[in-house]
Length: 73
Length: 195
Image (cartoon, rainbow over all chains, first blue to last red; front, top):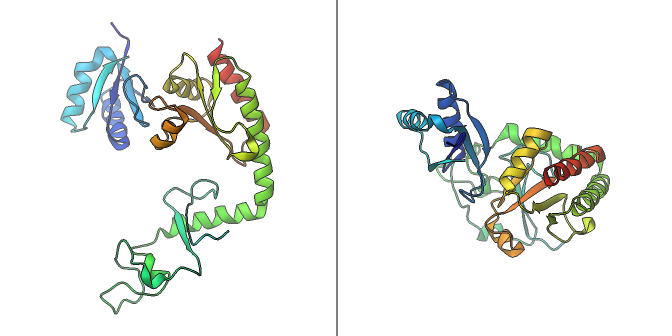
């Protein structure tokens, strides 16, 4: 099982929004430069505990934060 | 310099806030032949329904970012007081040390002319066996060094360099950067490259 996962976004504002939403729900998250293996995008991605992937996706969907993808690190 | 139209951004070498910039229009330009790209209130000539034809109002549609422009003015004054030559000499000295220090690390490729006198104070590099995103994250996390990784919104430049799509790690020295900072940065990259 991968320890961490990462959420990718189309916009920086979505990344900041997701950080806020997930932090509020007690998830340990961290904004990091988008890992190159997933995207050439220059922006930020959100690292989180991969074990929380299902919950993170549901929380972001409920908060209507649009994500581009979610990957294990 | 024979320049007719010079557009500049405020948040780089002029030390202004983001969201500021300007367009210098030279004397040889016939402003009557140029239409503004956007029209809207300028805060002047309120009695007219249309955009005024007078310069600079003709090209300053909308509400100006007054606080930002005041910040840009302070930045420009700072640059003039410190002196462009003095700032440039400082930047060249740091850039030279940074390029030389990085190139001495096995596995590091430094891009560009590799001549501090022929480039700005930004230095792009990559580290064999490490993603640029990983290097950027570790510089920030472990060493408190901020950089920008990736394509820097300049994919064509990176295609020319042969660094597309991975990009590079880009460091930039300013007037506030010290030689100590440069040595710390070189040591940090060395540590990431050869733990």
